[in-house]
Image (cartoon, rainbow, N blue to C red):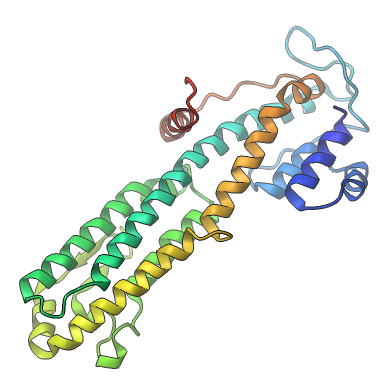
Length: 291
């Protein structure tokens, strides 16, 4: 497959353009990495390639010596190799996040079904259980979302964490009963660690003052929290969209690997370590392949 045809296909696949439009864009000088950068933003590699890349054999060190600048082409393929494993690792983490968001939806639904006849101890137990589940979610993904983490810079992941946090901190929950959100019931989130906590003394004070209002507020919060989680996983929303884009770019690289290597060179193989290596192993397990 020629360089222009590869770029045309990628444009059509990710930008929804028709083939003629894609070929025009490719002919205007867009490189393969320009297209990857536009579809899956990441590190940018400058290409010194000129014109259409011809099909050719490779040198013993994996370079295409028939190109105007074999080293730039080789670096391009090195970057593609690295991106592939990053995208695969991200796919594994985002798939796990999707499952966790479903768990968070279930946690909200449990609160929304709070029985009005529940005694104070049961209300306290349910809220404590919710806080524990929320903190398990934070513990699972906080490192991945931090700078340098597998999900660092992934909007869908950061939005998911932010949306659920905002649901807890919404001051208008319970307004009908003159209660200023879950914070008034003792649930707060540490701005540094993102960990939630329950002040049981504050909760007991509110139960003593306005027990019916507390129950209604907890029920309303559970409904709102569950709905926020449901929307994050809904078709066309953040998490499914990111997973869809990741799947398409991973499939494209896999399908066209031989053609890309014959044109750009082999590139250095990716050598992931740490959290990315673990995420990559999870991806391969998902795919039923060996590491």
